[in-house]
Amino acid sequence: MASLFESAGLDQRVARPLADRLRPQRLADVVGQDHLLGPDGAITRMLRSGSLGSLILWGPPGTGKTTVARLLAAETALHFEQLSAVFSGVADLKKAFEAARLRRQAGQGTLLFVDEIHRFNRAQQDSFLPVVEDGTVTLIGATTENPSFELNSALLSRARVLVFRPLDETALEQLLVRAEALEGKPLPLTPDARIMLVNLADRDGRAALTLAEEVWRAAGEGETFGPEDLLKVVQRRAAIYDKAQDGHYNLISALHKSVRGSDPDAALYYLARMLDAGENPLYVGRRLVRMAVEDIGLADPQALTIAIAAKDAYDFLGSPEGELAFAEACLYLATAPKSNAVYTAFGAARQTAKNAGSLLPPKHILNAPTRLMKDESYGRGYEYDHDAPEAFSGQDYFPEELGRQQFYDPPDRGFEREIRKRLDYWAKLRAERGQR
Image (cartoon, rainbow, N blue to C red; front, side, top):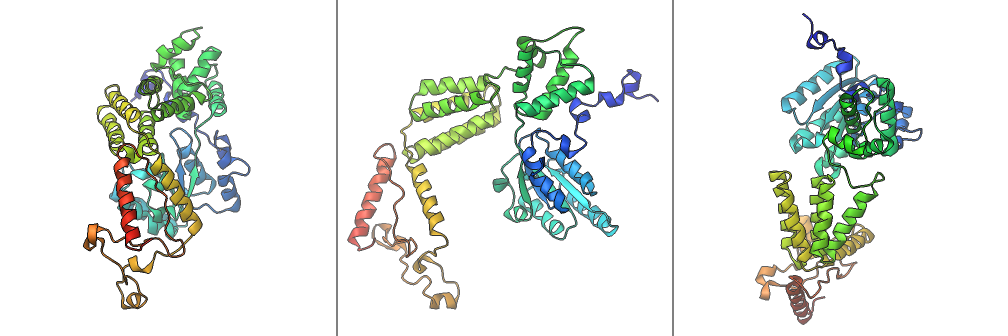
């Protein structure tokens, strides 16, 4: 019986998506990741040494993570096994591990590629540890999220993190040229429309090829699309950002500085421009949270709560309704009292911590669960603050070698005015009780 494609007179190979047909067959064909695949790239050096360890590939969509994993399996003669953390569970992992053990007994290694690995919970991530440790599998995990926050430290300690970069204009143009060679015809776009297509792809190779495919499908005989025609064909909004992505950073800088400068109208204007340009809403939400902690802090503790609530509201409502939540948060932040005291204090504390190295806390504030630790004066002299007058003992909690430090200096405005009063009062009590 003829297939659907054959009945329609279509070749099944041609019916595959352009991005799939153009998938690189060699590591040298992968574009935009020269820091990994170039002559001195990290992956090139690994292959040259003849040893491929477990890897975590971190980067945005459409940058070649899955393709590189497949090609690494071919380069190292490992059996390629792929799982997606979105659709797989414990049973799938056990099945994959058992199959890898059997292959190993037969002399065949396994490269286990796990897409969206950050979606596995901590227990599922822990299940990889023994099979990675004993070499049953060479694990390659792909993630769009920061591995430092999303993956277990135990798993990270057994794998090397490689960062995939978003594709720049040159890399995207290379993909379009290859697509034209494969199709045997040029993209029916004016030069300006071609630049716009690259911008619309937002540094995602798969997106660029999908857009190109849409253009070829839509073009009539002898038809060439300009920028306005292109937008109608692909049904997307034109990004206001320029092709070098400078517009992206310029607008977020303008939004952040307008909030910091307590200008709600300017802040709302730049927020609207970013959203209208099709900016990733998650990025907008993250930046609002950043403004709340960097420029407002404890001057108005509600700022962080409202910024996070706006992000959650967008997740719940989607676009365009959820954009109003961002507008509300933006106005709240712009009109809130400003303080960078938390930001400054944490920076100073972090620098002091780096310089101090591994100094031990004073023994009187350490627990003494064993007799030896009690004999070493652990916990001796500690005063329980709730039993002290004013619930404040005034003890020194810094390492003895470091001495008491001051990082946090709240200004006399907003809620931090009240914090300043408390700190001044505790400093007075500390001085009266002879403590530093």
